[in-house]
Length: 290
Image (cartoon, rainbow, N blue to C red; front, side):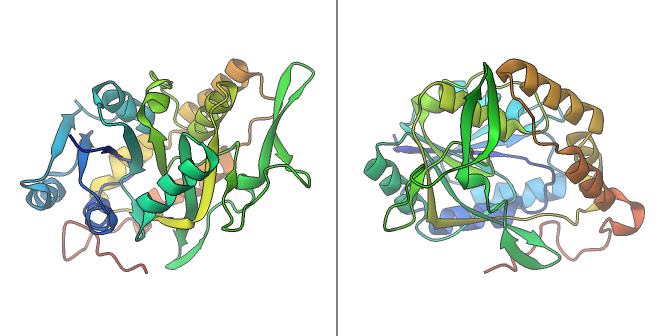
């Protein structure tokens, strides 16, 4: 049995999955078992993925239709027996040595979860994703939780390689000790700020989480293709996002839940008719990023 499991879940679209899988297999320095969740991949995209994955160690989990990322992860977590679990969204591109670096950071800081430096694509450029989030500190304030305070001098100290403990993580790509990830199950079926819910849950349990800027991953943002449209719109439903904010506020007593709705409203503009890609040479996207 391999030491590493990789859960591969759909974030908002399908076309980048093959490119992400190619990167994953090229840049992971040991054998792993892939848990591939299919909540409705288009047949042409699925055919290319099937061809690439043929003969590999893959557990396929077919869902009846649309599912939020948390729902997809719930389908994976009880099945995993490997001691380490990486969870990736299907539009996250890994860089060389990601596993080696994150695992070494965990060992150095006696951590059970590691979070890479996350980049995102924007209009063809690659930019840092939420540059201040790794310096946020959770603080109890009169029985409620402040999640927006920046670390003071001496808090979350940074080592010589830039590695340091964090309270707030993103969920595009994370490495867990499996028993810690399974302690999150079942994840709530929320659509927005699920990274905040997971972060608080880990923090409440006293789990040490580290950020390693040496390990770099890139999340590919839209445009989207016509075959993504139905999934994309349901993924970013504004009512579901509002209910997610309410859920986190009530569950954790958060003073102020960072508002995702402005981002979602802007993001949904990619679903406008004139912005959706309808003409493409291949079912899957081509990896154009460094």
